[in-house]
Amino acid sequence: MGVVAAGRGPAAQTRERRWRPAAPVDVALTLSPHRRGGGDPAWRRTPDGAFWRTSRTPEGPGTLRVTGSRDGEILGQAWGPGAGWLLEMLPSMLGADDDVAGFAALLARLARSGDPRHVRAAAFVADLAGRAGGLRIGRSLRVFEALAPAVLEQKVVGREAWRAWRFLLRRYGEPAPGPAPEGMYVVPSPEVWRVVPSWDWHRAGAEAVRARTIVNAARHAAKLERTTGVLGAVDAPDPARTPDATPGSAGTPDAAQVAAGGQASAGVDGSTGVEGSGGAEGSAEADRLLRALPGIGVWTSAEVRQRAHGDPDAPSVGDFHLPGIVGYAFTGRKTDDDGMLELLEPFRGHRHRVIKLIELSGIRPPARGPRMAARDYRSF
Image (tube, rainbow, N blue to C red; front, side, top):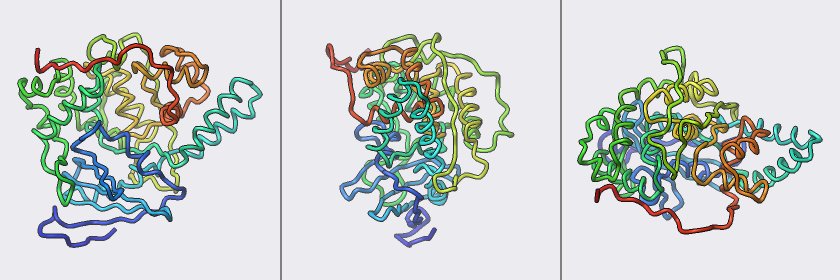
């Protein structure tokens, strides 16, 4: 890791790291889950093929630029107080801890199982995995940064949630350090989220339920962040099965839905990039802590752990669209959450990964009826 002068002051210094993974990594596929719609102020892809992200690291705000090369080497460049942390964690963000070998072994066992259903399912998933061979389940190691936008996405269509995300980051975030593309901002700190006034939540289009959920979670942000590292310091309450926000239809589960979690973790190149990383225990502990908070249930917890902990076995139970997509991919018919989990059970340990591969394949059931319209709470 090196430092290249690029202007004055620590925010203007360019720090670099070159990393060569043991197997090719598709940077676009691996980083795309962190993008929250078009115009996300914390994520950008520029015409030169570079991927830009901002983050509020334990060492302060930082900007990260990631590019790949034909020979497989990945270049990370970073700016701001958090630059060193972002570069240190770059392999983890790009899936160095992802258990790709374990997934291949699982598919091989299913193929040899002798059960015709498992053999067919394994062959289907293996074909999808072959088409997306560079996909890795990376981890950002920043829990609250994954939590706030996930809560905004509860019970609403994506366009509505992403509009709120853009408004709040532009109003309460800080400009990205370094030569970031224009309009990029760093996610506000938990302390700032706690003092966003009610009228700005309304202007963002987020009703009181989602606002309260984020504000309350911000009070517990430090404890949530510790689930990505050493668990001994975490003093957590007993888990609670808490529904996401209010009962509804468009994105998340109700109290009757069942959690599913856990992670197998082994380095693609033998490197975790994290001292004492939480792994499967960290994701499970995060699930326990998250669902003990009001307004956070199994869907939101899974969405957070997929991104922050890189959990390949955190299926988004309660999603409005996923059961239909998964059911149609495996059987040609839509199904519900229970049916989806039954179809995914042979792939336990990698259920989120299988869902991701199906989504990337473009397989969809025939569209019937109009799309759900985005609501605008600002006019209420």
